[in-house]
Amino acid sequence: MLRAYRPRQWSKNLLVLAAPAAAGVIDRPLVIAQVTTTFLALCLLSSATYLFNDVRDRAQDRLHARKRLRPVAAGEIAPAHALATAAATALAGLALATAVDVKVGVVGCCYLALTASYSLWWRGVVVLDILVIAAGFVLRALAGGVATDIYLSRWFVIVTASCAIFVVAAKRYAELRENGGVPGARATLRRYSDSSLHLTLTAAAAAAAAAYVAWAFTRPQNVILYVLSAAPFLALLLRYERLIAAGAGQAPEELLQDRRLLALLLAWGVLFLGGVYLGR
Image (cartoon, rainbow, N blue to C red):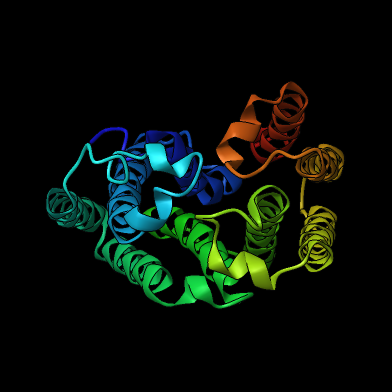
């Protein structure tokens, strides 16, 4: 059951740190408690959706080279047991989110509704399947802001949304190149093309870069550090795109094993957090 929860994908929920880190309040004890609890709640909610998806896709997953090893598809967990566990996990996640703030509970409900509708309908609709998953990333960041009562600026939302679309389009691009015509592949892959997905991820990267640079130049203080942080941010996007072109990216969390990507992420983090926290 722990494997079916897909703990490796919980790293996506670290987006709850984005808003409080950018606001310079992540070091406050109360904020740490709020963010940690929200992170745990999102981990439970996302795992509940993974279980639901695995039950729904078990027949198709058995045809896939990698997905056939998932516990439900492999017959290690009975579908009824997986659904019951998913329901209990979702309720626990909502309870934990509501314990932080009622508004966080509402965001949790929206996340469940979004992911459930994706599993049932949107996953089969070209373009919308990308946008709905990207919206899930934005909701994660929104949960962190709501939990800590931080206003999310338009620049924050644009950069987050653009980066989310970039990552999801890159994932589809990698899937199409490797599994587009094999049994068990996503149905929508047959209606995408290499050129359209590459154009989408390039446009998303350009939007994210433009919004980030525009935001950096409008900072009231430490503007030099913010502007300098744009360099590793842009390099991160370029490195990610290069890894996708080389055949990686079906599982975005696995790209964190790339040393250059990690080094760029560290460099960006140091400059960005330096701009946030120096001279407070």
